[in-house]
Image (cartoon, rainbow, N blue to C red; front, side, top):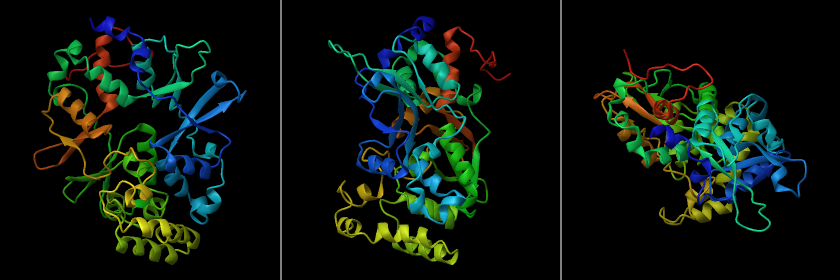
Length: 377
């Protein structure tokens, strides 16, 4: 039954998916910012085309979110003048050698899509099948979350594994990224880039290794470009406070300004001043915090951002796999932390880890070597 389930067409996952629109690879970082701030979502796709008039000749080469922009501004060569960095091509933000986007025919199987994801693909670009004479539809894309949600809808196919405790199967990852709250956030830029490329999160712990929060690419994607300044001069704990609010506290904004000037990062300080002293910010900050067009709309990059709280979503080592899957989907997170009763951090369960376990039911081996047995000996 599970084998037949994985043979169904990937087009069945695309029903109701919106058509992708994006920017060309020749567009600037500023162009990407404009689209991000005016769009409904948190990402914009990047396309190359040999013929601009023929949408079928276009090829999606990547995706950009506010996190990409923030981490791009954190590069040493861009800290001195972020305004100059805005004029750079978006291609400079795409990770070299990391194939996060793959095109897949709509007649491909769910198993093919799953294997691409397990190889590191973030999004699958699928042609939209339109029932019209012209039939010149564009593309939609599928994410890891889409596939996990689809598998959950037929979770009985995978019985009894979903009911097993996660500490009884090879699903808890111990190779996780951990920061202490007193560390400088600038020292964690490498972690943030890795979390973005691997679609996971960075755990924040206290002196006793207890989980107190996280910093994830999804949280950063709901901020604006001034988060780059905060990463540059704040501690990890202060950065969490900066990105955790609908709008950063005034004392933190002032602290960022002061420390930037102490480091002679005048243009970065100008960026912070330009945003928080703008008439748009002042007029919106007088509105109710429940008004979606208020501070959060100007602070964030898109209206459909998930909850930006830095509170980490956690589970117990004895939680069942299906419970953790539901927990991740309910909170729109790709990483659920595993903690003991005293909140001591054990590891994490990611979308990729969940998919690896469920894929073991396909009856097929992957091209690359995998452990034959998902159970601990």
